[in-house]
Image (tube, rainbow, N blue to C red; front, side, top):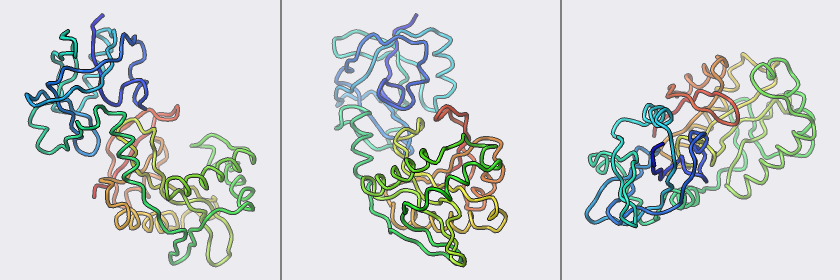
Length: 297
């Protein structure tokens, strides 16, 4: 077993911690005051040696070589295994970033560690978005109590269940309440999608901020779920394009916009591509293997 320090999204309070399954936490500590923490590409924590450094929070684990080799494969270019000095003078191993990454990165050392930086970042990105949006054929509006039954109907359709787990009527009501809370707490969530011509609820379209996304801190996702009878009319693309415009004009501190689906949901992937998002990779999230697309600002 190897003593290995982690300082970013793999630590115990962070969404990527599941990647350390099989490792044993030995202690929570800090580095020696000879490192700086950088935020690189709007995604990655980078610990870089620096003579003018500070102590950075980290966790030390016992990990086997099989796990460490697997983690090395998913680390982006510019990170490599090397010695890390702890506050008490001991040395362990860690993924240390190349000093060249300091130039394109943002120095976030003043936060003292990755969890505090993530909390600060999410707070500074909060914006209140419009309560409603109109497109040519859609009204994206706030949720009403009588939306629960038509939304729950969508969740029973075989086309929905092919890709997503079912929701009961009570679970649908809970989801609508969650959207309402997010509007109050985060400033936005998915809208209820109503067809202007019929004034009928046909699904949900909008933006969500995911604090539990394992690959970067609190990104924004554009997503949609529509009643099967309204598929094939370009409505997901129409509503999604309005959301992209809101992200671009209002959420100016968010460097990229995500959209997430499962690998065999080719219809959703096609909408993502029409919106200008490109496939970036895979992740394990909410118990599912997912593929994610992104649009950079």
